[in-house]
Length: 342
Image (tube, rainbow, N blue to C red; front, side, top):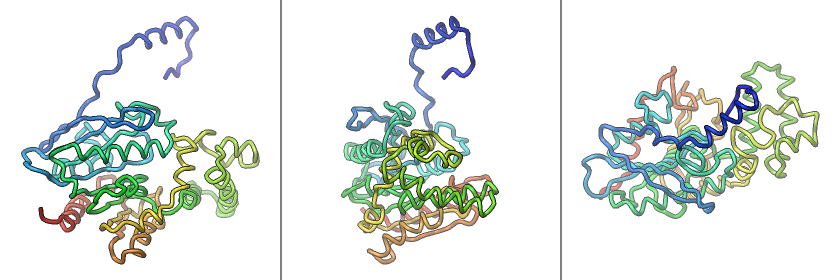
């Protein structure tokens, strides 16, 4: 909160003023030309209230199809009040809300935006409870058709999205820039790619990856924090570039629980159509990460899943520094093809 050094008296005064200040006003809200936004809450087992965003196509009567969004790993909001956002995921969300004619549902995980809790301390199971509660909450909105649901998983959320829906009917799953392998495999792949992009010599890269195989085994599968691993193996100190208690702003338990998932089993049970899209410029999720979803589905249900790769597109759905605009009509056509008549 306070980064500048202050004399003791000034520091006490600063904290006093901060403590007595009123809570921030309601954040800027989204506005759309063709949809209205409703704000609501769901709760997890900790009793934390999590903000949900429900949109309804303006002027629509009766029950309409719905897109349920499952978000990413980071502690970033799913609310996009700026219509000029450059965030690829945000552009996709805003355009689907305004142009699809569908209802949509999103949720901010604990500690994000108005949601209670602390994102940087929330493990995966607690976050999952929020997604599932938000999915269940769709039943109370009389304009949402529970039999015409599409689930859109973005980045990390595209890997586990069927766990959010559980046994509820889903017409189709869309996963963008996502993963379907073990988190251990994903991270070893990511570490190699990170070192290559940093220009490290090939011999140094191989040596580091050999160490990372043991590092991530202790961290992800043996339940140690990165700091505990380094304490036990000080020779790996220079390998680690993040927090001693976690990684990418989330606690170690979050990733240990991701590693415990069996996404092969999750996806082989999916009988709905699946569309997986990844860009060749994605430096976070590899082609193998994304293709694993398709292989798991199609081995159990032949030709139910489709993989598409967009040359040059980034993890954030941008191409040449702009949102990949062809994605929207592609998704609209895919949903139309899989939308049964009323």
